[in-house]
Amino acid sequence: MARRSHGKSRKTLPPEHREAIRGNATVTVWDGDLTKRQLGLDNDKISQMKRSVNIYIHAACSISLRRSLPQIATSIVEPSLELAEIALSSKRLERFLYVSTAYANSHLHHLHQGIETWVSERIYSLRNSGGDSTDLELDDLRNCGTTPEYTSHNFPFPYAYAKHLTERLLVKSFQQKDREGSLLILRPSIIGPALREPFPNYEIRGSAPATNVLAAFIGAPSRQLKFSSRFRDPMTESTLDEVPVDIVVNRILMHLYRQSEGCVHAVAGASGRHQFKTVWDKAMSERRLLWHPRAVWLDVDWHSRLLHGVAQAFVIMGTSYMFEDDKVHPVWNKMVDDEKAVFPLFARKSEELDLVVRRDNIRQRLGQWLARNGMPLILLELLISSASSSKGHRSKYYLQGSKALQLESLWSGFVYASFLCLLGWMFETLRPISS
Image 1: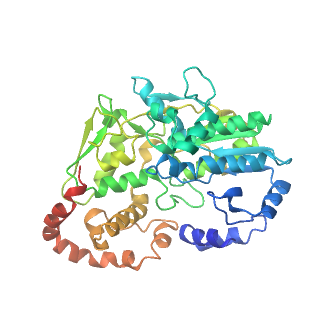
Image 2 (image 1 turned 60 degrees about the vertical axis):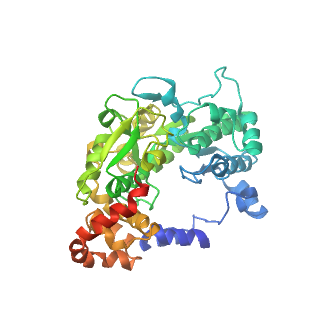
């Protein structure tokens, strides 16, 4: 296994899973660089890819919602075009699967006045005339760092527009080579902890946005958190569509196996979405600070500086998207019972949101926040209950590398004895970051 990939796997997988990958002769891992020509691979490796690879799955990119458009384009737009060029020059190409996001079309929220924003499994043009602007957009992005299409449409974050543009650029590239039928664009919604594989509740630290939001709600020192929404009752009308990461992987595999084409969604759907009130109430139930902040809703633009920092980072709170999910049903109906048992394609119901199994990762995120602000990790005991000793690998594995986190429970008595003193200090110290 390549050095960098091996180092990353040590941080994200238990030993038995790492060894299973390293010992598999059918898996070849190369260190590359998305920001470089040919993805940082030499000519010999590129030639080997063209000779031996028939299915390309492109899922590598930055998932930062705070990076600027020029920054995010270097890890989303350009590498996707680079890999597509390599694939299209290969005579063995059968399928090219691009992992986009269901929120690539999140700007549609502002194009109607209703509650549910319907998003179809198709490509959306940004021009009213329906004309093709992709080449002009790409030139503007490279030369100016932005595009008229981006500035004239209210995307929640540059990441969403970069994915939107990349989808259209890939479609055009494959059309020009008369290979449109080889392109499959898969759009997952908010990716969450695993349902079953590689083990239940698995997530790479920081890669599950909903877990990050829960950590922010639990640890926020603010007395109120201001969000943007046009809804009359945002607490119950706003939703988050979160899909387990292994469900996304299963859909990738089965759509490829069944030779699906075009755009397909990988989402929780109407029955699996989390109501904002459910997420909020669950977070408050885990919160150990004596006060609970109040959610305040403002009918302002979702980029307004009046909003709390959490709302500015995770802009789509206060919205509700209904993603079309029709193309998965023919695939599911063709699967035999044994395949359905091994490759489930649907998530659990929304009422099964369980914060206890996420507690370790929530604590990790809160620990990072405390460290970034120069505060002792023992303050975690003020914010959230001790890490769970749940079934599976999570708490045993994810905490083994941090002695501070392993020992912090020993300090709980000290923390509670000091609580009254620390309470006043926290309010004075953290006041500037409160909204």
